[in-house]
Length: 102
Image 1 (cartoon, rainbow, N blue to C red):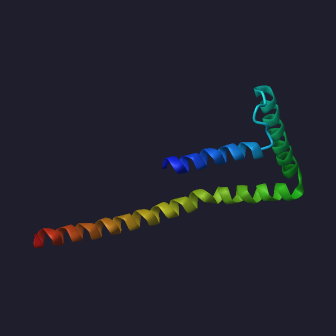
Image 2 (cartoon, one colour; image 1 turned 90 degrees about the vertical axis):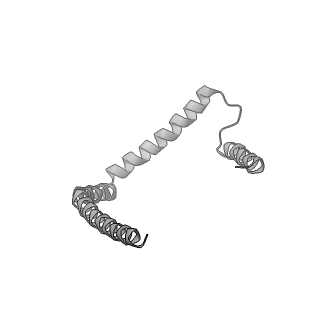
Image 3 (tube, one colour; image 1 turned 45 degrees about the vertical axis):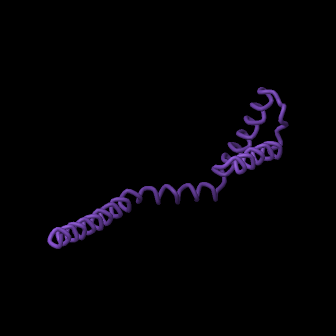
């Protein structure tokens, strides 16, 4: 990153901090209060989501998909290993031909 682009980056960070809603000279205890307030809102929204019927349905669907994930991952790993073996065999053939020529 050049000097000019670094100054744009720093200026962007300063603008981003000003736009966050937290005053620049705020003391640490108020910053923590703002942070904990935001965390509380996030956790509250998550709680409402999990208590709703639609939220429970979504979580149930995700858990069903995760139960099937190990089999899918194993199939992917097997297919990948077969492809890597094929590539290794092709490279060995190329190396053998180059030794004959060279």
